[in-house]
Length: 221
Image (cartoon, rainbow, N blue to C red; front, side, top):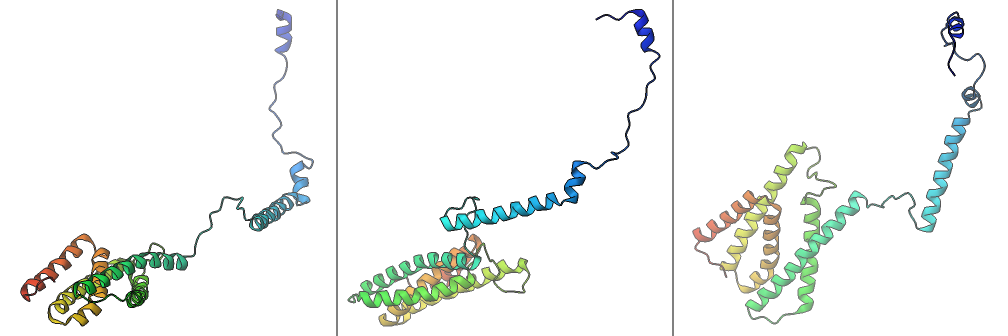
């Protein structure tokens, strides 16, 4: 509706005032809630309900919160070591059979399995102590972290060179009985050490073994 000129003139005499910005003089709902500790009661109730849901999910065997059960670092490390060394044990079994077949010996499967089981226990211990696990990559407690990997690489390098050269030595100088007994574990130890090494150090260890083979006048049998 269009206002007349008189109405507009009358509205011009209305005084303008600022809004009241002072706080409320009476208690608000928030004040009452704080006085009655309603917020604390709600939080406590939510905690109790969460505990009840977790207990119920455990009893029913169903994880409603979406939490994935995980292994402890020690159990994860032991399981990983067992899986890796199982492969090494199968390799030891194969080497043992091949060496006995090479020397024309009758294969005793019971003895082969016994030697493989003993070798697996030894490799399990070595692997658990020396392998760099993601859950625990510390080899020597107290040593700074920047020296942990060089120390581990040095150990594997020495292990690879020593086992490779000694395997070449016994296969060329010892009798067949000593060779059949020592060649399978030495071969597995050599192969594992080279696999654990970085590419450059692994190639260098193989090169040193080749130099030892040539300088000693040995041959691969």
